[in-house]
Amino acid sequence: MRNTSDPSRRYAGLAAQRVSSAPDGYRQPEHFGYDFRDWVSPYTKGANTRGGIALVLQDWASEDGLKGGPDERIAELGRNPGIRTNKVLEALLNRILGLSLSEVYATNAFPFVKRGGMSSPIPQKTVYATARRFLLPELEIAEPRVIIALGSVARRTLESAGITCIHVPHPAARIGGLVAHEQAWRSALAGKVPIS
Image 1: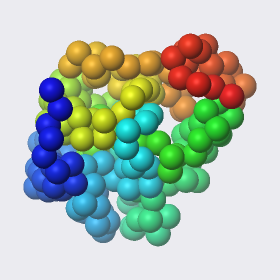
Image 2: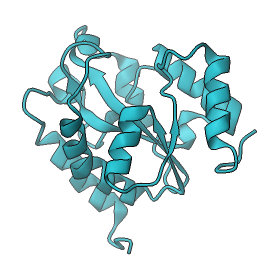
Image 3: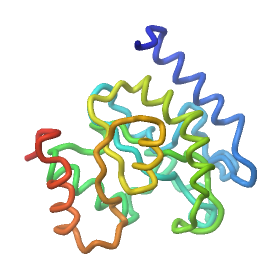
């Protein structure tokens, strides 16, 4: 049964919870000079179309990646459009689904800032606990028709909570170039979503 209360109010409450808490040793985007208080995951700021396709990535950012101070592109979109992951993701969405990031709902299983660099791991139990608190209610609010998990951590996190998803390689996965990613995505999405 869906919650019929105002989704905007529910989302604002969830975002406020994210801002007022973080797992031990992890920091908020706001500690790095950003104001994403209105968002559960900053990534959603530039990709918040509800009721269609939802993309779930593993995590939002790392301390090393945010050391240089606030970046106006990140502040505007909730992501850095110049990094490889986001460039590949935009290209895949456009080539396969004919969509841009602004036309889907995108979020992270772990919306906090992780220690170290972008390749630094987060304990799976920490991701699971955080996802149960934030991601699952966020997806209820977003009401996607299809959820696409980008990478194994996102897939395992969703499946551990009983959420049906389509698993595709993360755009940063070392499986080859854009053509290899496109083939893998097309194979995973075939018959499940309209592809171009």
